[in-house]
Length: 53
Image 1 (cartoon, rainbow, N blue to C red):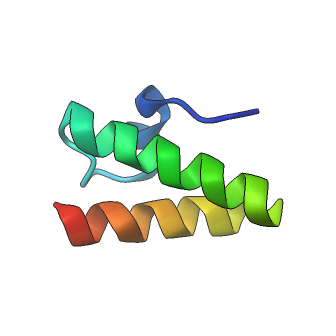
Image 2: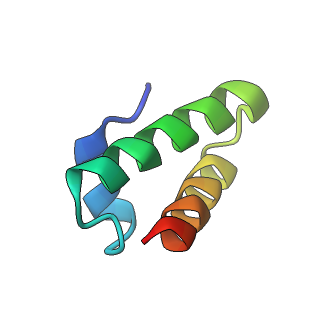
Image 3: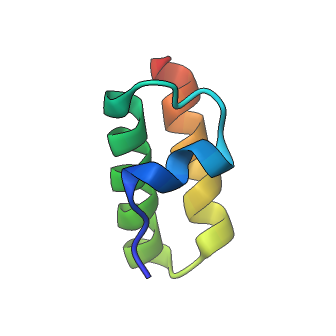
């Protein structure tokens, strides 16, 4: 199930703007599609948001 921008707040407090939430969802979904690993997808999305916040 793909993530949405609304899911970002549940996984990281750093996604505090709509743009960061959308970025989080984009990265998480791309990683999930590439690897099939939900944990890794969340971790990568959190890392990208942290670097961009």
